[in-house]
Amino acid sequence: MIDSAADSYRAGTVAIVGRPNVGKSTLLNALVGQKLSITSPKPQTTRHRVTGILSNQAFQAVFIDTPGLHTNQPRALNRLMNRAAGSSMADADLILWVVDAARWTAEDEAVLERVRTAAKPCILVINKVDRLKRREQLLPLIEKLAAFHAFAAVVPLSAQRPADVNRLAPVIEGLLPKAPPLYPVDQVTDRSERFLAAEVIREKLTRSLHQELPYGLTVEIESWQEQSDPPAVEIHAVIWVERAGQRRIVIGKGGQVLKAVGRAARLELNQSLGRRVHLELWVKVRENWADSDAALRALGYEST
Image 1 (cartoon, rainbow, N blue to C red):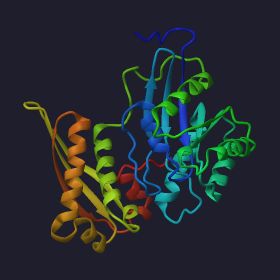
Image 2: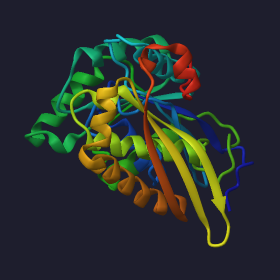
Image 3: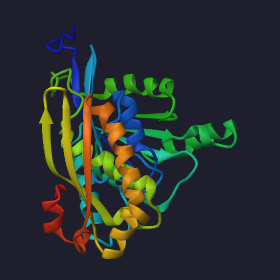
């Protein structure tokens, strides 16, 4: 039993930040031990703040997986994602700044400036160390990056290796304030099943489609009907795109792309929801939704 009332118990919020495609979502999923945040090789897959909660006998860390901070903000959606990441840093007790061991960019420099401005304890997580060509590259890299800021700790790891991720947890514990849990100790996220289902569908679309189309689509759950005997759920979802030509691409010849996406999403949702899922997908056009603050709010995107 967790003695969350003990004076030594620690709890707080931890913002996971970094430029796009450094492995923030993979790290969140590894820390909490289940998939909450979707992943893909394409940058800017994460668009929302996703909360993952890790609780044990000694501490509770409420991780906030944020959209990748990026310098190019041509659309309202880009600006919204940057605001979401920035506000998460401002509200957090601790920052996990994730960088790619094999690649440093101008966007990493921009994140560094935000970390300095936030003036919060920060752990520098050097991810993807398994991709370094030579092991002897690691120590000079740690020394170079550690000199950028007064980090509370520097942890090199691969988010794909459980042993590496397990080394990070006690470092986080030591930097959280003494406080009772912020959430029930058996809760792993504050996001609804509807939200997580929409994200799973968007992940399958992102992985199936190419070019720039994944950034021109979003998913909205229109209806969610539960059935008790046997346990099942019927989900109707709309895939919104910006142009008629995009709609044809998402559907594919003879509907093959949409069918494959629906099947992949349904199989994952069967497992994650723990009951049989009947999934219906439609593709509709909403011109320039990613440029409209009103459309973004209507589609469930946070404004802060």
